[in-house]
Image 1: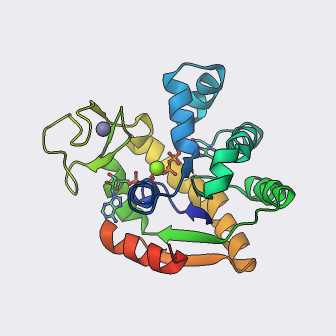
Image 2: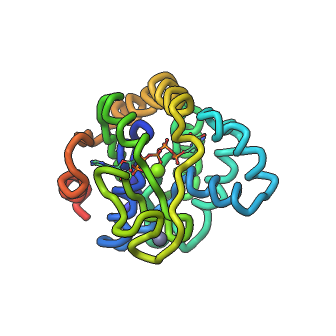
Image 3: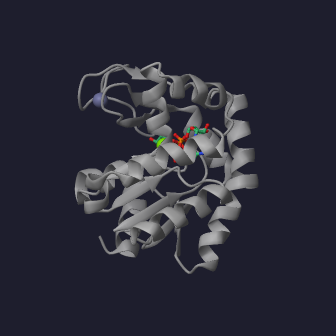
Length: 215
Ligand code: AP5
Ligand code: MG
Ligand code: ZN
């Protein structure tokens, strides 16, 4: 199964990817997560990416495409198939991915577009908390951890993302509407698109996705 999860920031792509990994054994690649690991490791790529991410801007296409092409090309990822979360999110990225997968003879099976209104997005991002160790995603009101500041799963310390500040959230939403919405239409024209209502609770969204992709 080769799948893309696409949608606005905070709609639940990471939450659904985690469920697909935990319950369906799928392999996910999140461009945002990969960038955040590079930032934590203070690599050159991390330093470059951080200049954009902290402001809610996109990392330049060439940098993102090169990084993701390398990951996707890795054999273990290809064998099991993959779920892409957060990539592609511009038309040049979508075209580069098409070319890469067609060279590999491994075309996409489906693109799942999760949607919700901007108001819901802002509420979700404003309360998000993540685990620094295992990546589990919580929400201050909707999904609070059992102990404040600590992960239920691994006891790791929890943190708030730098790009979940109000101005960065606004910038990310605007970029989504300008640059990522056209990517959704692009896959619609190719007949690969499944639309999923992301306003529902995470378990319901998960059931719908599993039904759509037949996992
Ligand atoms: P990335 O990490 O991909 O961020 P994003 O797309 O903005 O999406 P998020 O991770 O913020 O949200 P999500 O949809 O995963 O929601 P989540 O499950 O966490 O990218 C970060 C940055 O990296 C970008 O801004 C850019 O700078 C750079 N970047 C990444 N990819 C790039 C690319 N391809 N090109 C260029 N630059 C790139 O859920 C959010 C919250 O809501 C959580 O608290 C969760 O508990 C809660 N929640 C989730 N689902 C539900 C639900 N159904 N009901 C109620 N609450 C819910
Ligand atoms: Mg995410
Ligand atoms: Zn954890």
